[in-house]
Image 1 (cartoon, rainbow, N blue to C red):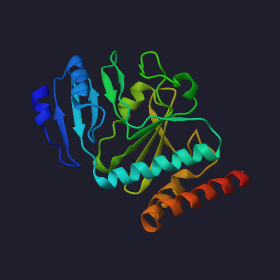
Image 2: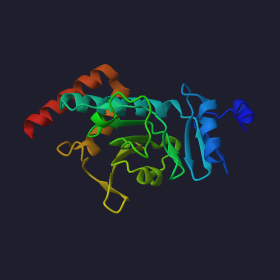
Image 3: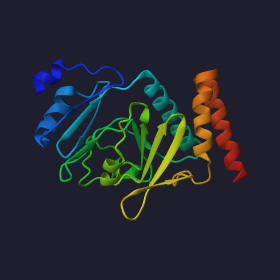
Image 4: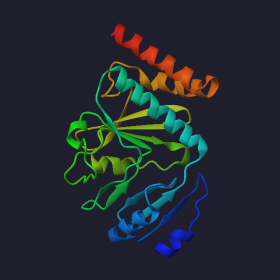
Length: 216
């Protein structure tokens, strides 16, 4: 299987599904694919998905990631962004690579760690998925206990909050940023970045955050 994967080409925006993949095979596949790659993987109880994102996907991912970082910096909240780190739980037979993720409340618990094991370490506080390529797996984030999942699709932001029953519920406000109307405003800044450029947009976004903090 590893030899076949080396020869495998997944066009941007497409995905490949492999069935009956054991956990050990999944681990070997991750090692074989390496960390420096465009492809993203998801593993759920023997089903392995390999997907390569589109440029539009990457633009939205980077833009929203920059906005989240700016939010946390302006609010003076310590955080650790871990990008598309592979989060795995062998006991649950699940593994997922978000488009980006952030340790915020649990930042101190994982600070300085070279490896994370979700059987003993907390999951990231916030995961970000861009649904242009339709690869989001909310059930896997639920199983791993990620408190908040943001999905960006068709120019809209969806905020999902983990409930006591272990399922996500859509909410208009983030628990991490409860005082900011991000659902209606963040997509506007993503579009603005396309129109006037990143740097000008980031300055405007930071000013919006500061003004919102003062009003609250």
